[in-house]
Length: 153
Image 1 (tube, rainbow, N blue to C red):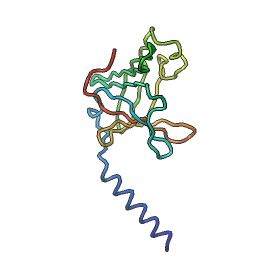
Image 2: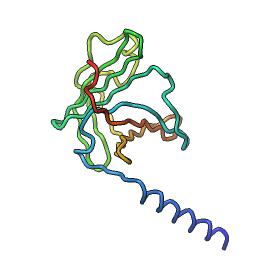
Image 3: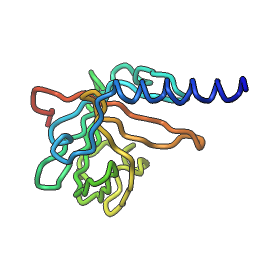
């Protein structure tokens, strides 16, 4: 009996949490320039691992995107462009161009390899973009805020 009460409690509290969250998988909600500002791992929110990391993800209505990052105060960057399809909270992304002037360390990053195709859960929750990845078999979620000014070149 106690187990049943506990399960009912979990079910209703989960329902209350999801009801309070505004979430969307609508294509036009992802359009714009997004700046990474935290991640969620093992259910806990964390700031970026490196405080000077500036990471931008841009989604255009024509199905193209751009991923760019740099570190404040350093003359290093990584940039790539891709084509995407977004449907039912799933982002299918193919890298179509990698900046030839990228920093040398970018070559070791799988997100900077031309031709790579990824399929990832992506959702807008309370106006923030959540991008699900996996780390050690557990969800690792990048969280991005929409920027109001253009992305750096």
